[in-house]
Length: 429
Image (cartoon, rainbow, N blue to C red; front, side):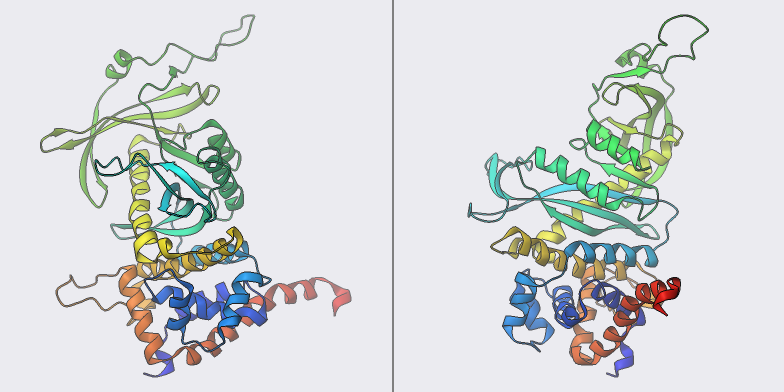
């Protein structure tokens, strides 16, 4: 297979990620990244063997253990690559957590967590590592997927540590993607986290308890003495049922769903009286109506159907967690220190994100990478098929043939800030 068989978008993405590490370590980083992108295991040795083992084992060990590079820089490069490859009108970002079971108590971040699976043959509590993941939603047609941007190991307790890490992820996200919609589960709908997201200009959409203290928005006060009213009458069950019922057909959860909902603008007490959009939604099933859920959106001007459609995209993180544990081997990622574990998991996440982004990108830009089996529908593109295509490409072209093109592009990207600074500073000429 000739060297031109490698799609230019592949070399550009890998070069952008490699430019985040020092120049002398880019070859080692690129080999580990491509090895992580083409294997199903989370062991470092699997990625090294898949990359071809062009260097000694000590080089890879020292790169992960004591190399002078920052995993936050790799995260920023991944975010830049995502923003250049996709341009949705509105970005949706998910924050959710999962637990990777561990037996040893000496593993970094090994704590006792509550088992939310609630299976009859499992314990209510289990020991494991709690991972908090910041993921971005990508779409192609009617397909919706999630790209892992930054997994973070939870520390300092199972509850307080998750909220602190979630605020840290939102602070790092900032305005890199512009104003986004943050999709949260019921556990993360806390005032501290929501206020931090709103302060950055983001919109928060999440599910809350149906007995949440919501109040009618009071009318503008007339000219009278005293403080204006902050809350109106409480939204009791009778007031909610008195609202008009709307019925709509939407594309949710990968299929056509018929929803019935009630909506109004309310004042949320846990947000200190902030006016939000509340949506009481229920899915229609063949055997009857489903469970009623209460959604809250911090943008009261956002229509209720848009709130329902946006929150349905949050469930794309569940297949992502299954792929994290079993698809690219987070359960096999074992390191002795938290810093080294975060470095290796960052490379693992970037390798999986590489295949996920190529699976949802324009098929014309990735020719030959996705080759589905004859019994699968034509045009099927998944991260697993992209990973198999990358493995075929590395076997046919060979990693030494790909490295020169990746190195040239990464060198040009790393030299751009220096050239801009030299042109802006007249003394540097």
